[in-house]
Length: 143
Image (cartoon, rainbow, N blue to C red; front, side):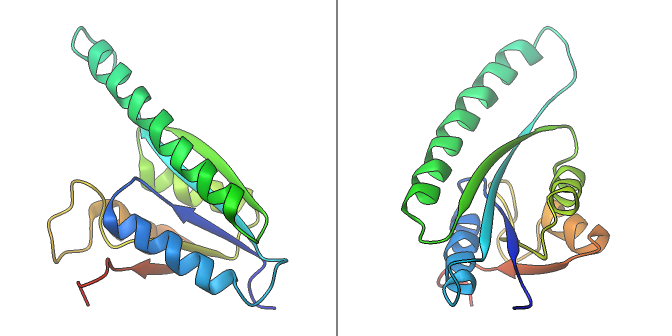
């Protein structure tokens, strides 16, 4: 099998949900293919305003992590959920995929902040910097 472990980046957006669906489809032929479902909690510099922002981000990360755990629990493939924290989502995703021994990264074409019709900045950076193959999923109806 060419692929044994897939990292799937998820932020709760429609394109990232399409990435989850695509990963489940790619993994379907073999129950031995592992899924690593990751969410990036982007941290911002410390400052008076960042305290409130970071608490909202932490609450959102917990919600997304719960969604991912539900997906992992219902997957027929072995699935693990991981929360990545830092300032550079693309670097965190690539580094995690390499450290975890993944063969493939699957992610949405753009995240929550992306402009429709364009590859998002994180998706672009991952495809540019990753030593692994990257499969970019588009949301349904965007094809």
